[in-house]
Amino acid sequence: MADKRLYHQVADQIVDLIDSGAFPPGNRLPGERDLARRFDVSRVSIREAEIALQAVGRLDVRVGSGAYVLDPADGMFGVLPVVTAFELTEARALFEAETAALAAPIISKADLDHLEQLIQIMAADPDVGVLSAEEADQDFHRTIAKATNNPAITHTIENLWHMRSEAVKVQSIYTSVCEKDVRHRAQEHRNILDALKARDSVAARTAMRAHFTRMIEALLIASEAEAYRQVKQQASESRSRFLISARLD
Image (cartoon, rainbow, N blue to C red):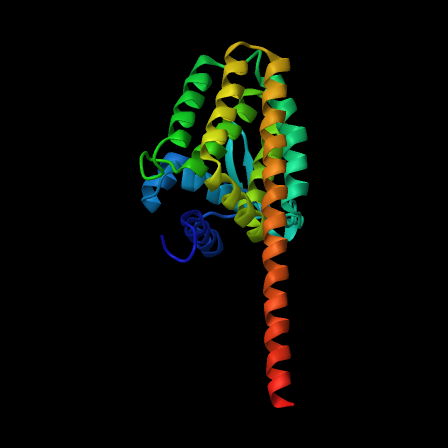
């Protein structure tokens, strides 16, 4: 992949078309399938690009309707807040646990089958499949949100995931945690799916909350390790300065 992630490149191309007048404010963008064909990318990349552009106020993505071009002067959405990995994970635990509980009684068989496929991707070799493990993870949570049939919930979960993807420090911490814990992540998603299949709201909420509780613990360990590394680096730099100063004396 180039310096920019693929969906960033797609987002840039969409902005160029908007700015050139090809997609004026108020107009609906072509559908995901048409845009994917136009830019020769997957529909997932198109969806990620649209979410990114929504976060900076260039698009209004409406569930079941499509993505509409906004006038930047309107300032409908603004930029995302600056958050830490812990703050984001706390918010995700709160919203996504209740989202799973709401989805459990009404989620469709097609969505359940799709979630099954996504878990298999998460548990497989990272080079296997159309989606990466991270993309499958995101689609898993997005599918559950959409299964609630509540656009406000879907919008909230999309934006929480966008914070995870766009905040560099948050993304790096999440990546380090997820890459080291593939087995636990796949099993936790399996537990969530089993609860959804059983149409058990309480179990779905509990399984989703357990997933994020374990993630918070992993984030604590990763942060402690990073803090220890920084202390060692600072101590090494101080020692080097001291030795240089001693030799000069």
